[in-house]
Image (tube, rainbow, N blue to C red):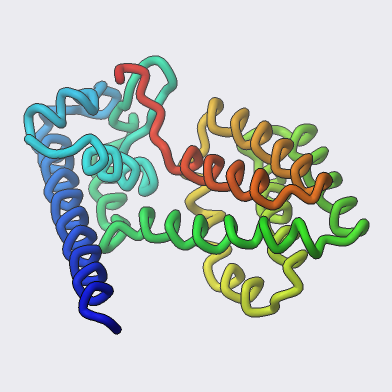
Length: 238
């Protein structure tokens, strides 16, 4: 590796470590406020803007911290209203804290999916068959028909994504996703919101139409936007 590339890789690694450390500090602040009773079950926590100002950190770090607490069932977010401590016994909340992801695994999984699925859309646009497009149409139609937030919705959502990966005709790509599919499904169960589900349906439709036109760049662009929205916390106070 050349000197320039080594320096670039080292800088990226430092940025990643720094972001992880700051995010963990924000998590500890939120955790402490909940465990000390400053924010009780059912209370609305401070907005992202307020937390950013109080802690002197970036909004990205605050958002990643909130995402992790939503993922483990400590917080819940409502579009237009803000983020609240779940109405659960404090003993249950403390148990949920034990499931916190290490080293911002939510962020890492989002990055993994974006790298893998964005590129796969470009390959799928070239290689997908009529049968593959038919399968995508079926999964998409079922997503629109089944109850939102149901296991069925998540199943068809995941099948839609897997069908795109299968369309690449690359077994390594498919197996890579199979290694993390259960974790993705678990995160979907925890992170889904009403607005998020509506956006997911819209993005899946856009991706499907792009693949029908063999427009890999458009499909990849919509996939990247979709995945960034999947992991975005709804906070109407922003």
